[in-house]
Length: 410
Ligand SMILES: Cc1ncc(COP(=O)(O)O)c(C=O)c1O
Image (cartoon, rainbow, N blue to C red; front, top):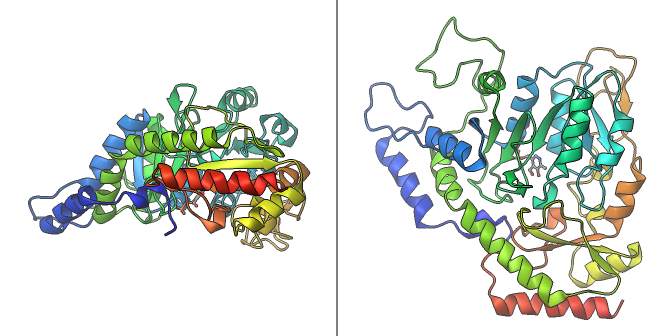
């Protein structure tokens, strides 16, 4: 089975919440006019998520991608604006910027596999409006220096928390450091409803705009269609009550899931000890990361390739989805200028072109890096091999022995 930890612990709790909705007959997030007994699962999910993450507002959405679009729209980011985003991320971080008619400016990652704070300032121009740190593979970015840079240059921060629901950085959850944040409930994520997402923010105005964008311009908590009260052009990115029901049950399992993952990862790491040829990726908060994956960085590209071959995997650089070098949707195209633009944007003289190998530091790290699953079993992320959230001690021991055996022969 492939999937994230939440998908491995689906059970009676999700079933009960779902049945509740089915019995009420109200599948739409606003209920059915004239029908009593509506269960408010989406609204309850929003309220409980805000409490759990420690933010004032959340908006439940239909996906992480939709949530990123809401964040960008809430901040008013549009034509000609530049957003700094790492080259190691899911395409949605980049495509949501393009679909907002703005320009993604790709940044290097460091050995945490998240954006390198030392490589951000050199990318800032007078068109830069925001930084989008992506908390990749459950590991929060090093947010302190990023927040400092954003303040110094008057930039907004959109946290992409899609791969790190519940992660903690220096005592606070990821998603509470920037102006606004996006979360995903896709099947490969920490908690899941198959698909789904959420936006989080402490800012009343951004909340109202994000909510409006996700619901055809309506104000939060609308009753019916509030004609005359719609202030932003939006779309339909609403979550429905069935998704809300599963999301709510999963949210209530979040802390148990994170505790289990951290325990299992720590067991695996202890069994592995210090391995020749290998260093583990840098963790920006050792205790706070989600522990969904164990990332090994080898001394050479050749050793990473040999190791991955032995576990029927690939180094992260070649594992598919999450590396700019593998995003044919944007490679050799220009954003911010009409020529070759994947979107019909206005003409700007300062278009950006995306080329293979344009980020040498990122390429070097990812060509030497291998993901071992702890909770996210996903070939597309380079983690088809490892353990999962339900693995017992024997399975953890077997995985450790296999890894040690392969590394010993390099
Ligand atoms: C870093 C990152 N951002 C955004 C997304 C988009 O989330 P969704 O698939 O829910 O649209 C994902 C999901 O894979 C992701 O990993």
